[in-house]
Amino acid sequence: MGIMDKLRKTKTAKAPKAEAVEVEQKVVAPANVAKASGETIRVIVRPLVTEKSATAQSAFRTYSFIVDKTANKTQIVAAVKELYGVSPTSVRVLNVEGHRVRFGKGQGKRSDFKKAMVTLKPGDSITIHEGV
Image (cartoon, rainbow, N blue to C red):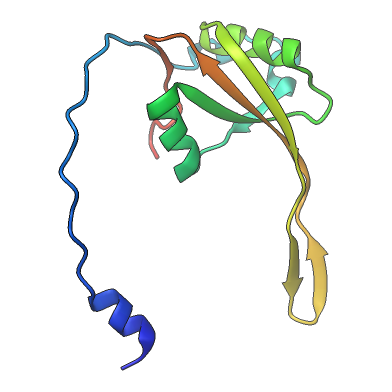
């Protein structure tokens, strides 16, 4: 029996669930995509759906997007307003360097990208995870 089998067989105690406080939320789906201008679609490349971004979304109302490398904060705010119909309270932008990877004997690098973390007002939300 290998170490991975031992790790799989260990039992962990489940933490009790905390009760959630209900806040009436305005859920907005990206229905405006058909009416969005080319500039808006060019600014926001796609939503970043990870476990970490889902936690930030539920705890802090912060949504993560991969945006164009040349986009600035004002363009991102305008794009979120046009696509989702909500106005963000703050936008944080960071450049992410791609990881260095190996493919057999050869080496490579994943693409660099720019990530925007958009915080919304209490009560506002965006539907990103439909069908995931």
